[in-house]
Amino acid sequence: EALRAKYPPWRPQQGGTAQEKARYDIITRGQQDGKEHAALLDKDGNVLAMVDGEKTKISLADALEKASGAVSVQHNHPKGTSLSHQDLITASFYKVEITAHATWSEGEFSARVLGTFAELDDAYTSAQDKVRDFLVRQRKSGTLAAEENVLLFDHLKNVLLHKQGVINYTVKKYPPMLVDALNKIDIKELTNDNPGNPD
Image 1 (cartoon, rainbow, N blue to C red):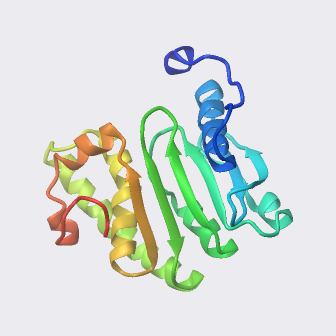
Image 2 (cartoon, rainbow, N blue to C red):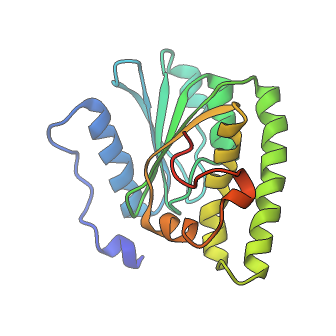
């Protein structure tokens, strides 16, 4: 509520591309009601459909079934987290690229699933278990607070899936709170790599 009070009432963005307007639309709507919103786009960046969701989820199946030609989904995450399991399932099933924008800060995460749905499912379970064990150790050692564990979970899981070649995961902008949390851990324990962009 306090964050929402900082933002003016939603108004459509003037100027810019259809994709820029859609991004502005879903983020500012999310700032007003604290919920998830999505835009389905075609290959030229034109908006095919807009979908309103709830505080922690959004159902895209009906819109994607009706919006033939959709190649990407842009949506907002009020908690500022990376792409969820459900986001990746949607990307896999409908063969779309999916992007999550942090609602309250800079943050943009995108993925395209490269493998089959079965490969994603198997790899996800393994990555989830590995990240969960890693974060439990960090929490028990006092390195991370509970909210930092939440911020890191999906990002680290997606980094592992990227390294396994199951998804193509990119981070265009890191939310400041995620950067702070990443700076507190030694990601090499988990990935044997650098904590920056998954590439």
